[in-house]
Length: 136
Picture 1 (cartoon, rainbow, N blue to C red):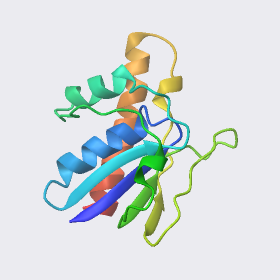
Picture 2 (cartoon, rainbow, N blue to C red; picture 1 turned 180 degrees about the horizontal axis):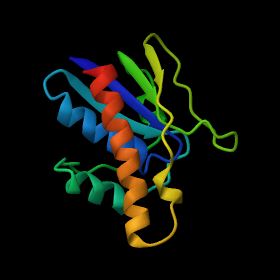
Picture 3 (tube, one colour; picture 1 turned 135 degrees about the vertical axis):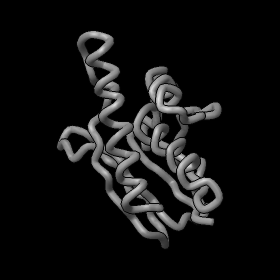
Picture 4 (spheres, rainbow, N blue to C red; picture 1 turned 180 degrees about the vertical axis):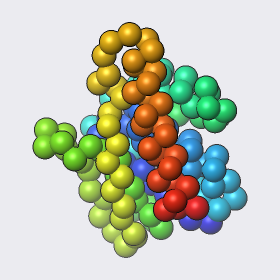
């Protein structure tokens, strides 16, 4: 079983969705966790709503610091922050394979309910495609 840590800055959207997707799609072969360098302190409700809309059970995720995983061993550490210069993307040190999957932050989406849902769906679909092609 691969232990996977998904990192993002706030741990409220992208990393939470990636954690749930990896645990769902990789059931029996992957055990995923998520964390942030500067946790938002909440999980964005649209993250959970998006997962449910796509038939993925998220459980009861919470926004947490990567400090909670200090000293733990992971086979793979994935960062999902955008490459935008204004966003600090965390780096997790240790002996593991590192991947960077830049994913737009849907939490910054504005507009109608439909436009915001589309931003969350876009992030979900990008993460799902990467998980299926590079992890499973």
